[in-house]
Image 1 (cartoon, rainbow, N blue to C red):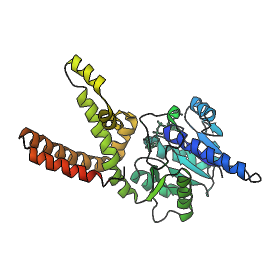
Image 2: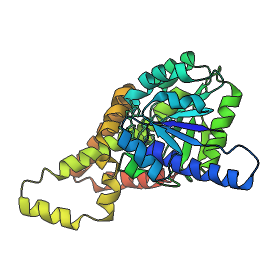
Image 3: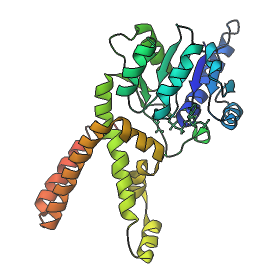
Image 4: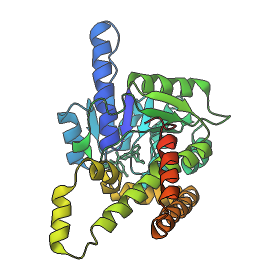
Length: 291
Ligand code: NAP
């Protein structure tokens, strides 16, 4: 089986590293069978060359025509490029080719791409780092992480099964839900944290005293590292989350603002009992999350 990846950045490159490793292992074990290959397409030739050099792909090109040889294609471009890329890609694919994406928002992708390509399966491997581009790609990025698949009533079961099988190769934990449910859920646990964390960094850098600012920078340790990580990531990704998941993000931000107001009021009123109750509830609430 040949696996195609379009968009060789953090996610596409990391997929390539794991899948190429797996296909090489399988072909070493099954000496007679035709070895499967990982084929990559990216915008820049330098990225294609680098993807080959780090063993993320067997072959790479800036031309989507390379995907004609793929049995399944993962679209791993930035969110804004997913739909235009698929529109240009379709002429090269045979009708049996399975198409999936890794976009962090699912409803617009699934609504537009499912009618264009019946063998389309929406997907979202939920792993990342603060870095982007092919240099950020890493082995086992998806291991132990959720891989959400968002099939619709019309998605062929065989297409879903293949995406699930590949997610299992990545050692990810597979979840299936509707695109709308996915977008509402990730607004709380992925998209809202980006904006909260970004606001934290923005607030901490407003300290007017240069000396205090310098001291705060030196003293910042695990607490600040954990809470600032997602706000210090790829800005393009954050903008895309807000743009494509706008309604769910606005709802989560508005609820977050109310929660912040409650904390602020308790501190203003020196209502330590209320603050403690609040923090006791959040301490208990955190254990509900699978992280
Ligand atoms: P990234 O590191 O910036 O990689 C995207 C790559 O796509 C770029 O390196 C670029 O390669 C290439 N590209 C851009 N436009 C293209 C086009 N029109 N055609 C072909 N290649 C193109 O971004 P990423 O973090 O991997 O994110 C990719 C996708 O994964 C997004 O849809 C995002 O929503 C999703 N995702 C991200 C995360 C995360 O935490 N980062 C997690 C899960 C899912 P060149 O160097 O060739 O320009």
